Every structure is written in C-alpha cells, then in structure tokens.
Image (cartoon, rainbow, N blue to C red; front, side, top):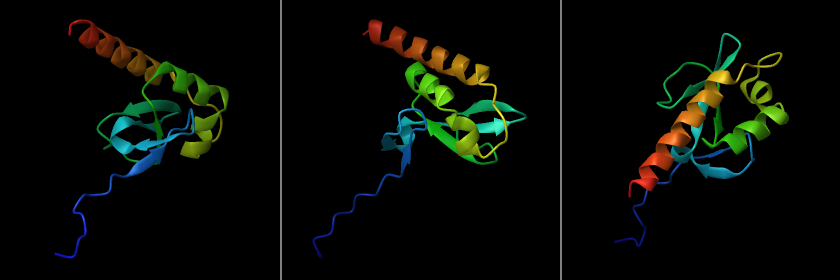
Length: 101
C-alpha cells in the first residue's frame, strides 16, 4: 500500500452568474441554440456550454452582467426565457419536495 487515497477528483466548473466554483453536478449546463440560451440538464447537447447554479438569483446576475453571450462566444444578446422557465420549474419542484418531508 502506497498510502494514496482512491477517491476520484470531481470536476469543478464556475457559475457564470455568481462566479463561484462548484462541483459540476451541482450546476446546470446551458448552450446557445438558434439565439436562445437553452438548458442542458443531461449535458449532451452539442456546442460550447456555460454552467450556472439552477437558481433565479444566478440567472439574473448572469443576464445583468451579459455573461451568457461572452461565455458561449456568440454575438449579440441571447433569449433566456426557456432557461428562466426551467429554473423556476426546478425550484418549484424542490420546494414542494422539501415541504412534503
């Protein structure tokens, strides 16, 4: 035994909203599809991805800072309606699950 631990390193990403580093599994991947910022929860859509905490506060910060076009390297603003809707739905589901416990 060499004394090394056998724990696997978890990949980390930076949230484009709050700029905090977090484990990749805690963040939501987004991609640009036809001028829209699209959520990619499975992480399988093609193209460059940007990671964000799935909370409205981080989405608002990213929009205010114009972080999505910069991170995804696309010209002009992106429509974030689909992303906001996804985050609001996910947050609503988590609140329901917490209240039922």
